[in-house]
Length: 315
Image 1 (cartoon, rainbow, N blue to C red):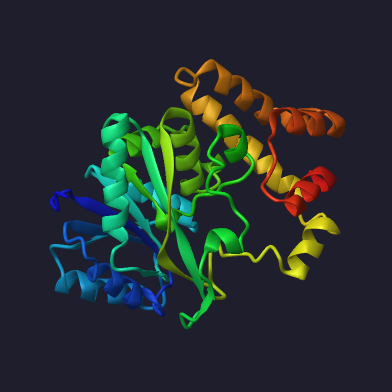
Image 2: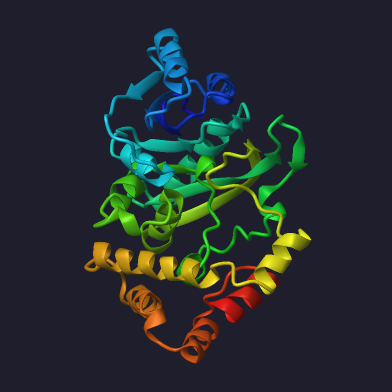
């Protein structure tokens, strides 16, 4: 394979001093050589920026740090900001506290090239992989995040992605076609997470593919923005079945995201998708019986028995 395809890695950081060096070292150890990393620090106060400055000075041809004077306060906004600064054909996303396997870039790029040959370079493409779940000290908790969290990588249809995201951002590679399209949103306040928005965009306008290999050691610690949840844990099951646990409000935010997608791409969305989006966006303008009937009719359910029961009970 041509080793000259330029990859841009987008890293969002905030108070990540404890683990950031290990993550950067894992990227510097990649078997694929042609990459650069753009880092946006969200005004850290723990020494993260000083560490980033040291790495930038040591690897000026590889590491770029963006200078900004506002605090986003969310990983979503930081990553959306980073996406606007990407100029290469292929992009990847990176968290501050994980460890990349040495062949992560190469594995994803090989799949991307294969899919672009199959669907065309103008097709918006998203590739994601599995992860190894580890604790703060990198001890393995689960070899597969997808199995640990009971997620199904085949759930890439719009009716499935409206209610549940199956894409983990730190595993993702996208092409510039998808990046440019995904940035055509009207109001990012209604985007739940950048990876979810990318998945919706690729589902409607392009292609999503999964590589069944763990390319990231997904570190779990007290400061995770979004972490791995063991859905077989009895406490998790109890919280879903016997407690409201804000399930309805969570689903409502997904309907708001659907509405934002309608507003942003109204003239581009195919008719069959537009109807599904419109009905889902207006779901809570109807009573509970209507909502349940709609969910069964359109198969708008989360994956797994426990999640479905919780959705019916509390949604």
